Image 1 (spheres, rainbow, N blue to C red):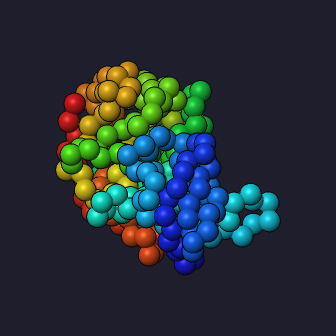
Image 2: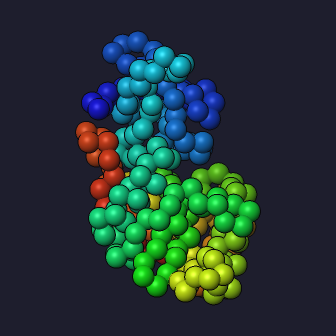
Length: 237
């Protein structure tokens, strides 16, 4: 899939934008409902993926934007793909020797991104896309997220119960929240208290209450259209 470069003009709604491509205006699908006000500014260079489905209203997905000298992936679908591939290839330090048992796993009243397992544990994992970085600080969310708060609270309950996935299982059920930072210019991660104080407080509770909370920094390559793992960042509250 060959990337196409253009210049951003306007965001019309959450999922629809307008770009200048080869001197003409074109409509594009934006696969991220976040605000991204600091990224999607007029004149910013963007990278598109051509989509030729007859059922689509737009011919392209807008998947990346250049912010200063940094390319940022804004595709909220990409972190899950990155995480699943990284787990399968034992790239991530916290998930070596762990297998992906199922994606989109329903537990309690929510659906979580992944169920992982190793010989002794099951892991309920929620993956979050992080595109906001200010002064070297990666922050989530960039818009209020009641769904995110609910997921974190349910993972806290999992960590408190020290239970198993099924009554006859011998594997302990653990919980994890993974923030995939889709750009390489962050030095550490913290919740965005200014945007959603409740999320920040519940994430802090999770961090100190047995939920594994990790933030992985990646580099977005606009040519290969993939995220490349760099390292794990410190988390501050």
